Image (cartoon, rainbow, N blue to C red):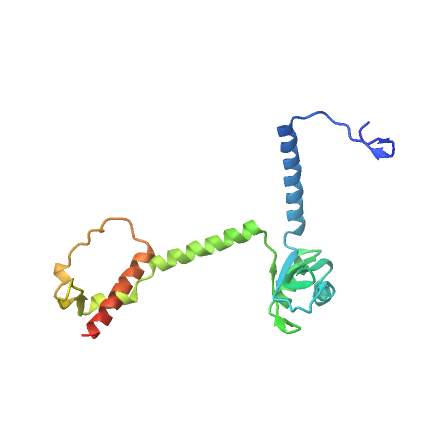
Amino acid sequence: MNGKELNGRIIYVGRAQKRLERQGELKRKFDQIKQDRIQRYQGVNLYVKNLDDTIDDERLRKEFAPYGTITSAKVMTDGSQSKGFGFVCFSSPEEATKAVTEMNGRIIATKPLYVALAQRREERKAILTNKYMQRIASMRSMPSPLIDSYQQAGYYMTVPQVGNQPPSRSYYNHGAMNNMRPVPRWAGQPPKPHGVTIVLKMCIIYNYKLKRSF
C-alpha cells in the first residue's frame, strides 16, 4: 500500500517507530544530503565579494561566462539591496580555478573583485583559528627590542615615593651589574603571557617620562 493513491492522495505506509529511532533516522538522512551537497560543490563554487551595487545575477553570470559552463550565479541581497557579495558555480574544478585566476582583482563597474573558492563555515573558522594561533606563537617567540635595549645600557630608574618625598633615583649599569643580577622569582616557572611584556614596556615608558620631568 505504500505509495498507493487513495482518494486522490498518495499514502505512506511504514513500520511504526519510536520517536528517538525516527529522529536518528531523519538525522542520518539529513547528514547524507548535506555531505552529498558538499561533494557536489567541492572545488566548483566560487565566492565573489566587493561587488558594485549595480551588479545583479545576470551581470555576474555574464562576467564569468567566458571561463566555463556556469550552473548558477547569485548575488546575495537584503530585500532589493545588494549585500556586495555572491556565488558563481561552475561545472568543473578546472573552470572554477581558471575563473579565480583571471577574475580575482579585476575591476568590474567601479570595484576590484575578490574571487576565491567558497568555503564552508566550519572550514573557514578552522583556518582562521589556525592563523591566529600561529600569530600568537610568533609574537611570544619574538624578542622585545625595547626591553633588550634598556638592559644593554645604563639608565636611571625613577622610583615613585609615598607622600611628599621626592622620587629617588637608582642607576643601573649593565656591565657593572652583570655578575650581580638577581634571579627573578619567576625563574623556572612557565613562560608568562605576552601581556606581561606589554606591562613591562609601559612601566619603562612611565619611569622614563617621570625622570624627564625633574
